[in-house]
Each structure stands twice: as C-alpha cells, then as structure tokens.
Length: 363
Image 1 (cartoon, rainbow, N blue to C red):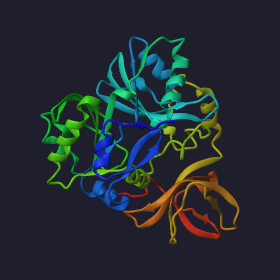
Image 2 (cartoon, rainbow, N blue to C red; image 1 turned 30 degrees about the vertical axis):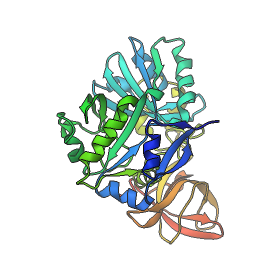
Image 3 (tube, one colour; image 1 turned 90 degrees about the horizontal axis):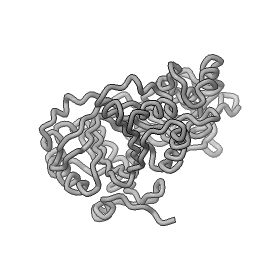
C-alpha cells in the first residue's frame, strides 16, 4: 500500500528529516538527534507536525447522544471551548482507541483520534450511529496539526495572534486567527507534559502558518521535532500510546484510566466494566525506573525476585532527562504499588527496577 503524505511532507524532507512509515503515513522521525530534540521541548520550544492524526466532526441534535454512547468519559460535563480526554471501549472489555473530544457548542463536536485507527474508529462509531442518526464526518485529510510544545511556546505564539494565549487553560481551546491563518483551532493540549498548544489548520494554510511559527520562534531557538522525541517525552510523563500500553485487549481500568471511565451513563460495554471496577482487576499498568544500566523495550518480561514472570513491558526507553532506563508495563496487581521492586528480563540479564508513581519525570 502506498504511504500517505502529510501536507508539509516536502518541507520535512528539505529540512533533512529522517522519514519513516508510521500508521500508513510518511512521517518525520527525527531531524537531528532524539535526545537533542527531547531537551529542546523540555527546556525551550519545538514543533511537531502530527498531521497524520484523525479528525471527525459530530454535529446535529443527536451529536451528544452518539458521543455519550461510544465514549467512556462523561462528555455532558463539557462546556463550549473545553476538551476532554476519553476512550472508545469495545464490546469485549478492551479499547478501540483513546481520543480527545472538543465541544464547540451543544450540537458541534470534534473527535481527534490516532492515525493508525482512523478507519477502524470511524466504522466503530458509525455502527452505533446507525440507530442514533448524528451527522458524522471524517475530515482527517483536510487538516494539518502542529503541536508547538515547551515552556517557551506561549511567548513564541503570542507574537502571531491577538488572542490572549495565556488565558487558554489546559484542555481548553479557542478558534481564531494566528500567523495569518484564519479559523485555526488553538488548543491547550499536547502529548509532552511540557505545556504548549496544538494548532489545527486547514491544509492550504499549513505552510504559511509553519513558516510564521519558525520566524517568530527564531530568538527562542525553536526547532522541528520528530516522532522519536515525541515518544520519549510522553513516556517520561506516563502517557499511554495506543498499540503499546492500551489496545483491544486492555481494559481502561487496568490501564489506570478509571478517571476517564464514568458510570453515570450507559456506554458501550459499561455494565461489564462497572462489574470489573467492583470486583477489581488482576493486573495494572505501572511506570518503572531501572536501578541498573540498561534499556527496557516493549515485550520484555517483568519478573519478581524469584524469577517468576509477573508481567510485560509495553513501552520502554532511555529517559533523556533522568538518564536512566524507564518504562510502562502491566504487572500483577500485588506488584503495582509505588516502591515495589521488580526485575526486567533483558535477554539473559535481570535488571532491578522500581515501580514509580506517574509521571516518571516530575519536571
């Protein structure tokens, strides 16, 4: 299958990005080095082009009914200009995808989903929409998405707009003009834990906006950032990655996503999940930090002191900020408390690690 190209594909190639296939798209993975790009975001400001993400409009008088049915969180609590993290439970106790829901008004919502799941998610939501009848539209190919992240993001972007960006709270958004582009969704969200904004812009305005951001950020040493650093940034903060830490076989309660699973309403598989909450789960997703030199990777076994397998690593890497191996993984419930000693089996070695309360990097 031919790889899809994001609107600024040629720009990234000219910038010397290493391009690789990701979720069916040709995507920039790194421009310089993952560690350098990671630190740029933690300490300054960087821009990710994550235009591969999926966007669905849900509109009309039945919009909220559909969203409430397919999502685990309670979207009825949203006010205009507010966003919400949620997930789409499947019928078997697992997760179809995690997503962000944006409320524009009572009859207009935007769902932002993972690139690898666009078709699957749309089909899943449409299946439930057949009996509800909301206006559901996949506009993923129409939008570019830039994540301008880091402690200097506000000062850089403020040069480009009259909107008071410091007034946009976390998980809130506005629509307006920035960098000469109109009708941009300016969202106080991100996947790095270092603050900043995500900008949803129509493809025909993507290049001028990209150029304006880099011009405004010159003094702040702004840099383009690839998906490699995005992964280590989210891992330091303990954010789940779909396909690794959550998937069709992991329950939101096992994944530590009970806080986005609200039993104040009826949603897909809510009865079974409620029963699971009452009875408790057998395994939990935990964060851990290695106490010995080594890098944990996905699918490495997690063991107890006696060498019994008690779980599996779902995400792992070297933390650029902690300079230690870190990871996420599922372990048996009795090994999930912070401070618990566990061992990561890396080939023939058993490396000592400690379960840590998330986020793993507190800065």
